Length: 115
Image (cartoon, rainbow, N blue to C red; front, side, top):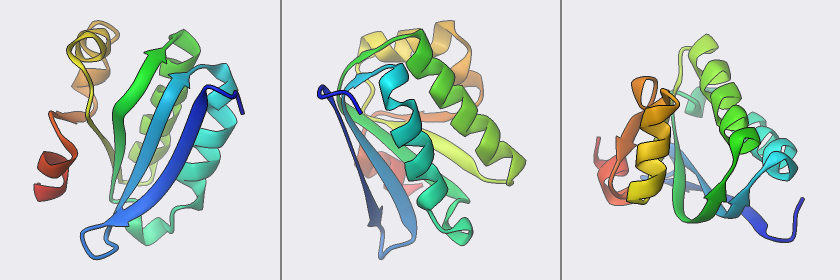
C-alpha cells in the first residue's frame, strides 16, 4: 500500500450498509487493498456498498480500472456500488469515463445512506 493511501471500512445504518472510506491517492498501489476490502464484506451486505471519496486527492487510470473491477464484481453478484463525496472534478472524470452510467453518485455520504 502506498504511503499516500488509506482505506477503512465501516458499517453504517445499524450495520447494514458497508462504506469503504478512501483517502489520498487512488493508483495501482491501492488496487489490492480496495479489492481485498470489498471481498471482506459479507456477501449478504453487498447489495449496496458505498465508496466514500471526500478525502481522495487523486485518481489515475489504474485507480479507475480498480473501480471498474469492483463495479463488475458487484454487478455479477446482483449488488451495486454507489459513490459519495466526489468533488466536481472527480464527478466530471467519472462522467467522461462512463462510470456515471453504472453507479449512483451521491453528493454526500448522508445522501447515500438515505436511499
